[in-house]
Amino acid sequence: MDLKEKIEVLIFISESPISSNDIASFFKINEKEANSVLEILIKEIDEMGRPFLIEKVAGGFQFRTREDYRELIREYINKKPYKLSRASLEVVGIIAKKQPITKLEIDKIRGVDSTGVINVLIERDIVKISGEKNAPGKPYLYKTTEFFLEVFGLNSLDDIPNIEEFSDYDDSIA
View (cartoon, rainbow, N blue to C red):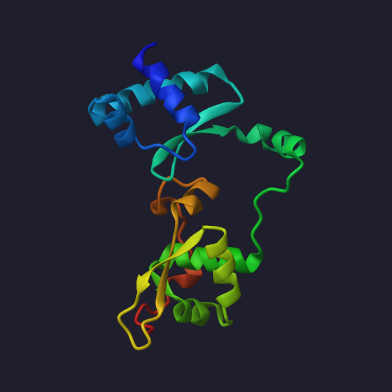
């Protein structure tokens, strides 16, 4: 069994995306070598045209199903896709772009109370409390989780598109 096959197995069995640094540490190789083997592996699997591929998500690598097969999988599992309400998508979008951010800041942007929506996002592990703001009342600060990146198929927060309507937002809100 060569290194490429071992890395493929490691990615396959990982419950969450595995970083090239973790792969390098596990096999006691340098990260440059791990990345080189990963590039070859990703290219080979992609060229095979199989219904799956290896993608970089949430800072690591993970086997993912190609878009063409998602509906088939949904039918087989008889599950609805991971759905969030419009309000949840709005709040997670605000948090993702402005993090860390307080509930008051989110409410000011939205114009409505976001307590229930934030609680649902925390319950689903899409958002988490990341600390407290050094302001009166010490309000919680919220930010997205690694699972958020996984759910939305993003490698990092830099992959989130700009949201024009928040560009005029004043970051100095308490």
